[in-house]
Image (cartoon, rainbow, N blue to C red):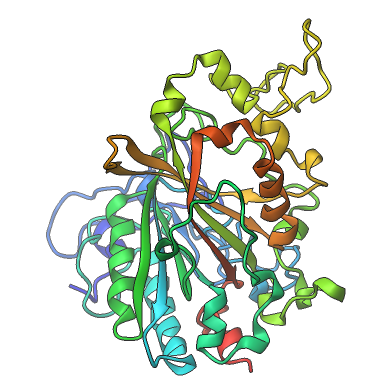
Length: 443
């Protein structure tokens, strides 16, 4: 059955907007299953949505969304179809996610890495199209559509020395500074290769995870894996910003692709830029992912009265609006004071300290998952946030914001940073390419 695509078994997917969901809409028109005479069954909207793997795949009339959220040839920092970002960055966050880091096996180098990336890319292209991998498919996802599956690949600092490519290592991959809130587990941090998987069906996501783990073969081994989740599509009456496990609306201040400076802040410019901040050409159209496993001390947090929780964050819990009034999207009035003469949004409120205007305009694109790994030995939940943020340069994104938070964020009492990683994520592969080919074979 491996040569029969899931799409053929289940029906063709209907056209949808770029990476988005149409609330309440029916899925694509179903067709009769290839294996039996049964009434046609249409895929739901959630199952039918498909995200393109290659950078030049277009959305028009195909039901696909390009990896960058833009059709090929659209304007942007990359300047060419071959420099469009990978999927999983501007793609709306899915309901199920896996973050996995691999280390190359002892003795494996550039040749083995190239072969692995080629295998991974070929299988990912098929899975994102709703098809089984070419051989040895487990059959886990044969009953599902693409379900907005995205697989995003990145390189850690250690990859470059392992493969003899240190001359191509960006200075932006220099180790992150130590932060006061860090209690990092080295075994769950960093790695040679990093993979982010997201899908709106848990079995589709797990199918991709197993396929990539199996295809690593003897070339690489899993260093760490983290499992995440978000609200499922359609769980709310209208699209809404997700909530984290503290119950807070999370991600309100994210930069938007429609912002005039979005590409400049999030993606590496064509040619890698110029001057002291120039980057290797192979990173054009790419981005840098900072990955942090942030444990939430939920027992302590949940003991706080609602008003105190809102003061810690600086926003109302019920709707995410700033304490200075309005709606979730209303700008914070950071100068507003109350009758007591104190700022309405406290000096140490998380929303105030992390605001771009408080950090020299530093901006990063948050794309997170929640996690719950059971109950710890101390009887408290091992739960929190798999924090992933994207930026064109971590020294102008994550680092200045985290330094500011480190110096007095009220939320720091209730969280603990337990793992960390920084990865260079190149642009999407063009037709006939595999991800990272311009790095691995370009020099």
